[in-house]
Length: 599
Image (cartoon, rainbow, N blue to C red; front, side, top):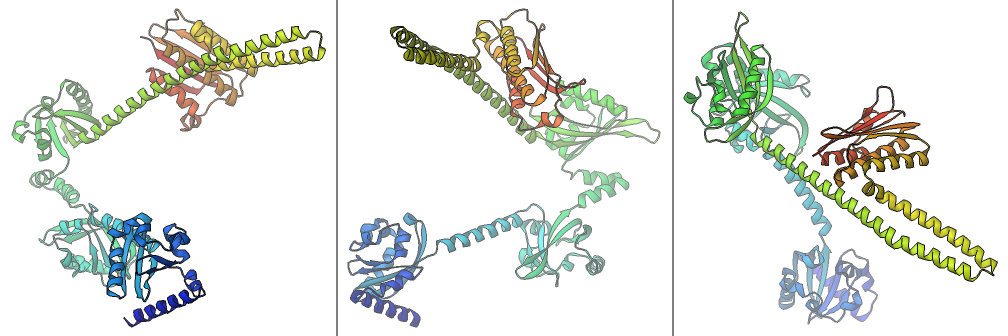
């Protein structure tokens, strides 16, 4: 209180000086906090540069105006109440608040003076943001720790006392958090195991993964696999430990070596379905998980052929794999069962043949995992992929239509205009036939127009060659090959054998564009001197082969995810449900093969 009174007196004194002279204002211009003064009608009488920075207002525009006239939203805030309280009760008031219109956290110190109020405003935004980020980070890591499905704990290296445990550890071991934090590592071990732990700590244990016996609160002994890492925790040298309970696995292995009774008790708790059949394909054992999957009680499955729980397709598949099983072959496959309620259950099945001491086949054992949810996701992905193919097909169609429309507009509008210009220049030339200078310039301009017309024709042809629509695919391929040879000096020979030309526009466009891209790749990358092209038609397919004698293509180049030319050709083929192959030819060079099914 004494310090606040001193600050109050200082601010009051400075304010008085500022009233009599402007020299003391320089003090408040140098501080990093905002400072302003209000008269008894809450009108600004002074504000420093920091106030201008915080509010985005010019200081001169504030002087003489009422506080809530400038900032009307302040009337609903605790800052407004604090200002009124300081004025009314004539005493120092402070508050901290987030002011949304300015997006800042501010700490306000409000001092009554003889002429009104002096307010010191500290911008806490950066501090609050940093604190929030720290809190968010700590919360994130705490959430990862607390909600991890595996039991986790942190213990002190010197005392072995638990410093923290997560929910999974509490649930798994049965101790409350308070109980855990009053225990050490030795409290969850038997005496014999505790002695082993002491010996273990004497060695270099930091990089070892070991299996230990732990004792739950109910006295149950479990076998766990420990993974630990050194950390610093609340100024303690500690270790973070994750616990993997392998009790089931260990007991299962022991049970297989002991008795049928123990074996059955353990497999009934398995999270995978276990199903065994005899040499006649009759069920002789299913565990609880199988019954839950198929919604049948075990007595309705025992003695039955597992074919009875499949659809027709499943029966055919299962019969084929049974033949492999009788030949002592292991196999794994995805398979559908039909539950009692008619639901389709997708499963992953791994089988092993059961062979007696004489080497005779006695049946099979299957480990069955329910993958229905995974299959649903896979189906959704396939549907999404199909939608993307349709979208790409639509985009390709739009692109070709835009090319055609642009080509038509250029040909009809720009071509006609250029032709008109040429005619007008010719007329001008005749009219001025007695003026050599004009005739010379006219000839030059006619030459320029001719070049422009040729350029327009070239652009129109590249956008959408009219020959493809007018004369068909074979003529367009031959024309493109000729253009390629003339442009790059690479011999391109076309051998075509199309019995008819009634292909759809989509097929003609796709084949022509893939052929264009193939030639582009040859020109850019192949270093070839010769290209052979075969275009022919079978009863059900249209086939295009493009082979060059260049340097060849590597598998790495084929699989390159940024080879957009190859990806584009594959996608065009996929849209028409066709096949596209690109590979290095045995005799050298690259071979492109396209096969499009015909309706």
